[in-house]
Image (cartoon, helix red, strand yellow):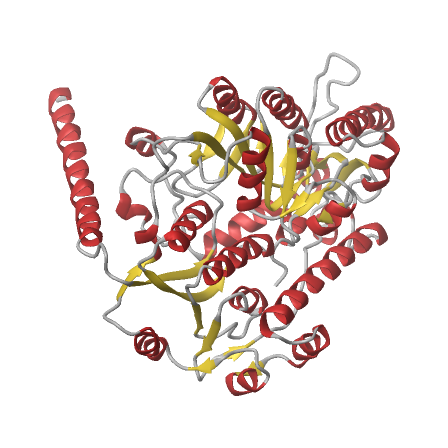
Length: 573
């Protein structure tokens, strides 16, 4: 029986490998037949967009275009340099990523247009019974915008509506017990309050003001309108397609097939229409390497990693630390770009990673590139880098500490009839028990502890950013900042995306422009790693997303972590 199973799995693996090879050959063969032909590249943007996902071992299981932001960045760079590319046609659907990622993509689309290749964007609609602000903001970076005649432009602005569970917890006899360091550190307010505290509202209002200013300014500059005109159009939304055309927010009302026919006629010649991925080039074989390491998700102790089934990811102190150690010893790697998209997490794991980032930075340049979110523990590890680059809309900062638990003893006893009879040795043995709130003695001890963690956090930032401690204390207090504001407070060095980060790494390493080789990390998963990964949940779709969001919202935060409501703020639409 064992021999039969072995033969079966060998034959299965061989069959899968041959099928994958056939698909790849077919794809490459199709591209090869078109070498030299003039092309219009096509791109569809819809749903979420991870910064990076190691390629699936079976290509048809991960055939979405583009697979991730890293693939999009590389492909758009190749399109700019490809002389056979005449234009780029982009279809924008409902988007599920944040404003900072949208700014990265806008910059890349504008660079394609600046290279003499028009970027024509098409929208069926910008929101249908929903907010289409992000979709239109992204489209505004294109050379031209086409909107379907029956579509609408829901340029509604920003809406942030986090959940507060204090009332529900009271009904369930569950007692929140939290301590914080930093008056803006609002991670526990989802459990302790019925609405925003004055400090949290102040910080939230500042973020929304910054986002709104960036949205209005970006649209105004792209469409040749004043900021006042764009603000008035936001207040007048939703707009019909005809009204959007009249207001000069779009250039044409037409369907997707009509856009294609028009581009064929305007560009002339027999044009091939191919997906953007056909322009992607593999990393150059020679030259000095700049390693781009992607770190996404909450920060945890241990290996971390990416689950190919659920697409969940975590930054593991041991896993990412091993990668950084290997890059430090790799003589072919001249500089490292660490791309961070994280709400933070474990204080210990954040400190371990900060230590390794600093150790690496003593041997070769390390540039942190911040994505939608790099706050709390995410900022802690970034503070050890040689340079920090962030988008204007990146959420960062949150230099503060939170600690606590949801005590369930009353829920168990009064609603379920469950009782406890604990036995203990040591006065503080039950300090972290989930049954009872902290008593006065325990609270005093924990206040000392979080004060020590906060003090260390302040010192890490002051040393890493070369700032007086008093300056750091003024901008800390657990307050979240946009990248734009973080630059003004010297928490980052430069506004920009991956291009800016790679350019900074190249400059610090003394590499001549165009002579670098960019390689992405971590490495792609092997087929056995993929097969051994955790299986998908029994349900999927909207129900799975709802369950995941509820589980995330009601999870007590780590010491250096943003609450779920703040993470949701990366897309307040």
